[in-house]
Length: 267
Ligand SMILES: Nc1ncnc2c1ncn2[C@@H]1O[C@H](COP(=O)(O)OP(=O)(O)O)[C@@H](O)[C@H]1O
Ligand SMILES: [Mg+2]
Image (cartoon, rainbow, N blue to C red; front, side):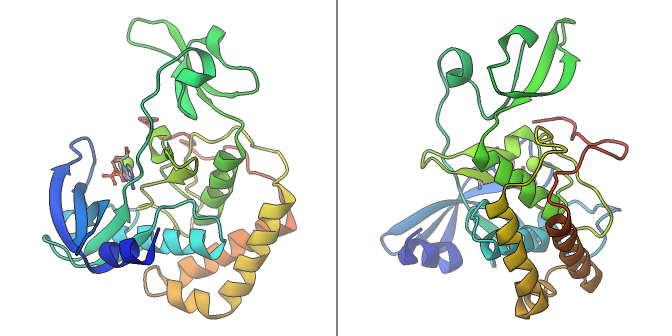
């Protein structure tokens, strides 16, 4: 994103384009306009947040922003450029919109990186995560690709303790990068990892990613922890640090545990 586009996102005027109706909170699509620059974005005003009993501290927008800062600190850019700012409905989080391709075609070419198919149509090398039946009782499978871009997102989710990685929260952009969205319920102190990306459970985390997590640990020992403390509680900063330390000490992806390891609906 250019400096001009970044400026537009940070302080350009927000023009309302529409509202995402299936979203659980007020999720608005806007253009952030500054001079000749216009950046499509989502705007989630804090005022539109539905209160959650298990996330009583801070704001969902603040958690989204803190998650973005972690992704940036790791150098991964998994989360689209995100800012906290004022808007037509008050302060909120504003995040660059990711354009995604329309998918047509057979086999893997017609599938999203996280998708649903019939049991006989699982592409070679993809992970089958969950068997279910559709409305008519036919068997279906929740699948995802064995893709390093998605794997890195799965590692980020372990670090930020993502409680809601649905299929629709992993977007393959037209630019060839894979982006994660909707990080309002992340960074809790207790394990709440709930994700569709279980394909790498029990496998080793690639060494380059582990090295990046080592860098995150150093930064948390410095000023970065203080910076995050503006958006999440001190205990949550410590918990993030501990998850990072644990991952480096034993660089293996966790296996599903807890009551509901897969978000529902899954998309
Ligand atoms: N930055 C983004 N770029 C493109 N699509 C997005 C972006 N953020 C959200 N969306 C789309 O909007 C939907 C709803 O947004 P989401 O962040 O999940 O809202 P909520 O917090 O209400 O669940 C997402 O599932 C995704 O399809
Ligand atoms: Mg959502």
